[in-house]
Amino acid sequence: MPDPDLRILARFLPEFESPDFPLGVWSPMQQAEDGVYTMPYVTLSPVVEEFVQAAYDGGWVLCDLDWPKWKETEEAITRYRDPDALARATPHQLAQLLTVFIRQDRFVEGALLDDVKSGHVLAILRRAAELLGSGEPSSEC
Image 1: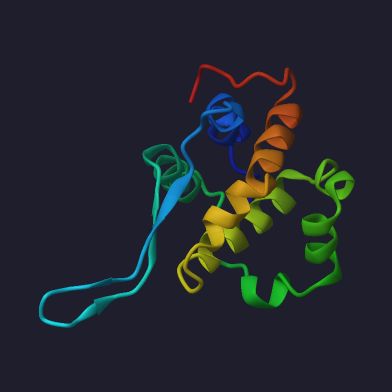
Image 2: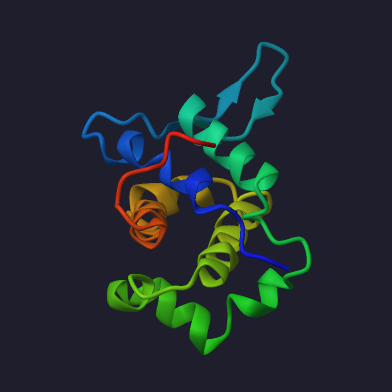
């Protein structure tokens, strides 16, 4: 199976690199008048939501990856912790990392927001743009 189209990721690079890029926010725990509590939750910015949907639609979230198991491997840990290793990642390895980041967020509230804030997602987008060739996202998507 061929790697997903790098342009799908690279087109988000300018927005994620912007210094005033809105990531998302945590909503605090609230108590309603009837005494029921709403636990804290994350609301991702529209751009991050669009990015997640594009990752799913574009095949960057791998449905056949056992991501909970893979994220514990030496390869995954190295790619996550070592910026130089991430800067050498293949498209498939980028997809593996994105799968972990995006899927994990369904089970750990705020996980994706943390990965965006930490610069891990930005590093993936930069690597995608680099692999694309020019470092600039293609206008064809």
